[in-house]
Structures are given as C-alpha cells and as structure tokens.
Image 1: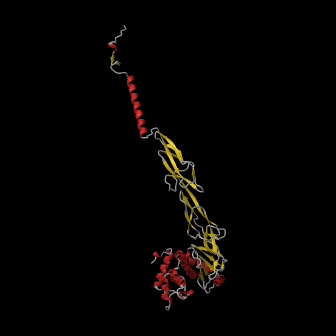
Image 2: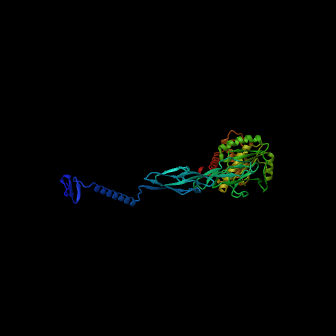
Image 3: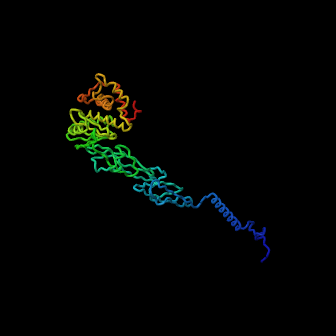
Length: 431
C-alpha cells in the first residue's frame, strides 16, 4: 500500500532538510569537501614555491667557460634542464689555441692538467665555471748555416694558459779559428748581443744568428783568423786545436778537466785557441809584443778568447791557468767597471813584496813601474796558489815557477778571490 508519509520501518529521517540514512550524511557531500581542501593545499604550495623562487618540477643548470689563453671556443655557455631535481647532461664544446694544444677543461684556471676532456658528458646537479686548459711550445731556433757546431741543449719551453713567456738557456756555438761573440736576433745587426748560457725569454718562436769574428791584434786595428785542425768542447767552453798540436792538446785537455772540475767558473763563456808556434808567433809579431806564450784580449769583455802557444818548452797548462785568470779579471770588469786587479788590497800586496829579496812569485809579476802591471801580479798570484795547493802533482819548476815561498797573506788573498769568482763576483760571500 502506497503512503505519502515516511514509514518508520524504512529508517528514513529528515534532518535540517537533509535526508539521513541510518543517521549519517550523504557520502557524496564528504567527498566534495575533501576535494576542496586538496585544491586549497595545492594552491598554497604553488604560492609558497613562487614566493621563494623554488622550482619543484624543473631546474636549469649552466656551465660557463673562460678562454684562459685559448683563442676560440664553440660556445661560452652550455645548459640543461633537470626534472624533479634529477641530474642533467651537457657536452663540453671544442676549443682551440693557435699554434698550441687544448688539453681540456678544469675548475682551476692555473691548472696544467685537464679535469675534463673536450666532448666529455657532464652530469650536472649545479652550475659550474670551467677554464680552458691549453699549452703552447715556444722554440729557440739557432741558425747553424755558417758555424761548425752548436751545443745541444733545451731550446724550447712550454707556456700554459695565460702565461705570456718562458725561458731557456742560450747554447754556445763554435766557429773554428774565429772568436765567438754571441747571438743577434736580427741578422747582420750586432748590437745588443745575446750572450751564451744566458736566459732568453720566449713569447713565440725566436731565431738567433751566431756572431763571430776575427781576432784583433793588440796594438792596431788589423784582424786575423786561424785555420785550425779541430775543436773539443770542455765543460762550458771550446778548445780549438791547431795543426801539429795534437800531442800537447791531449795533455792539456786532461789537465784542464781538473781545473774546470775544481773551478767551473774558469770555463764559463770562454774559448782557448791552442796555436802552433808559427801561427802564434805571427800573431804576436803583428800585435807588437814578443817572448810570450799566451794572450788574452781585453777588448772582448763578455766572451774573451785565450791564445796559448803549444810548445814543450813552456807548459801550455800553466799558461792556460794564467791566461784564464785574466779572463776572470776581464769578466769582472764587464760587471763592475774595473778589474779585480785594481782592488786596493791587491795593489798593496804587490807593493809589499815588490822590493824585497827572494820575493815570492816570478819577477814577471812585479815588472813595469807603478801599478800598471797589477793584472799580471793577480794572474801570477792565482796561478801560484793553484799549483801549490790544488794541483800539487803537476811539475811547475820547468816554467820558472817554484813551490813554497808562498806567504800566508798571499794565500789568504788568493783564496778570497777564487771564492769571489765561484760566487759570481759577489764580494759579500767571501771574507
């Protein structure tokens, strides 16, 4: 039977105009409420993310590059996008350095090694700054077209990244029978010569041209060169050997090796010309002097050449030590403007013994009036010291030298001046 009134047996109630089922609101109403709440929460999240510039879904990462001495690069920046904070990938671009090599990239601009190579895949979780790491070889080129030999050595160096230049040693060369003077950067221009064994700065490849010349006679402007047989390199210098001098040369080479081992500065940037008696006498006569066995040209202050006569009557070894001591004196003058022999203590020492009986050293050390021959006194002083206290096995009486009779004050001065030579003419290091 149909009835418009609610039947209590059907458990229906009317509450605030809503139909209740078993005393509970409709489930559909609750679902709508939760949807509204969720939407409000999502909206709030996006507001917060936007306020603090926080990206939840995507992030863009950048790698920026600096040339750091390289010449070009494909791009100065690469970038990628990360989703949900995951890493993303970029490929490192190609870079080039003119006349050089690109090693790769590094986070350290001063590095000489690459952390990453060109074409590497980088997995980014943050931004990065990378520097191109590159190198370039600068070469010292020696024009060897007119010389007999150039000593081997390190004639190139490497500059990295933004470095502008590097340095190498300048090797010594030889031209048989000629004095060797140095190098020039411009062929034919002999001003501002580059010295042997000096340091030269290379900012690119540089070519040096050897400068050599004839020997100037001592008392006039005429010059000559010698046709010699061969050359031998000893420590830091050349020994040119004239014809008919081989037997004397063999002994001299052995003895000079002892000298240069004890005092390396004696071989620095010098040259010895061992001449036979005919050639030496002809040069001696043209230079206006006689009865000598060795000669050092004071007009060559940077790279002096020693002439020694090869004869059995006067020991070339003793003559060489004497003349090479003059070289030490000449080189000091090039640095300081005056000879070591012009130091007051040497002049006083010579004057002290000049007029005594049985004076030490040869009479030759005291020849000439006044102080004009102090350089010879200096050379004799060092030669006597060397053969009395260093190479004591060598017989020296044959050349008019005698052992012993070497006062303590002479010994002290000789040791001081050898110390000065050993320390690149620094007086402060020698008392």
